[in-house]
Length: 170
Image (cartoon, rainbow, N blue to C red; front, side):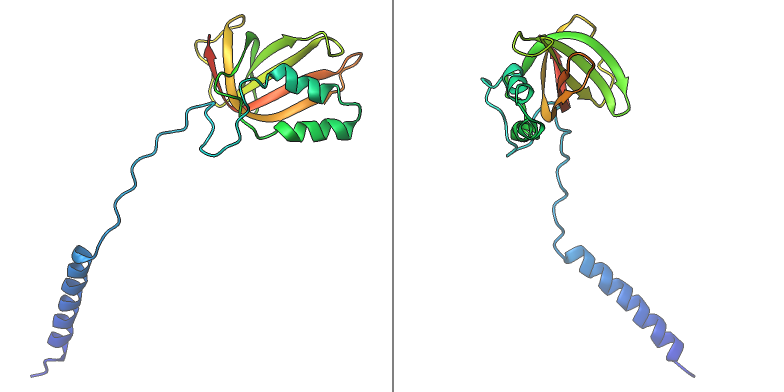
């Protein structure tokens, strides 16, 4: 009687049992704790954060009053990618619009030191900002994505675009 097939079956069974025992006995890494979603407007650890004394007006004036395009770009580079300080920037909502990249909460600010005397802080949100309306006073935090001087007819359009933004009443 040929025992070849029986030996092969026994070897397969022993192999499966041995692999199962190995899997049970080997150390397994601890499952990673679930991470909470980042709070909108909060910088990640180690990110550059502006001091609270650095206002949106100061940033806009530095970029907006630069005499050449290259000077504007150099000034913008100082702030692009930095996060607004813990106190945030305050202002009244002028408009809320749906854009291709999310929802834009638009805050019109005024300063006599710019041509046209106004500039915009535009906070871009991933989700529709329920509970916020035109005229509400809000605080904006987030990452400065752009500080721009755009041609706009008689007067330029000045704006600071904030992404990964958080907008709260107050």
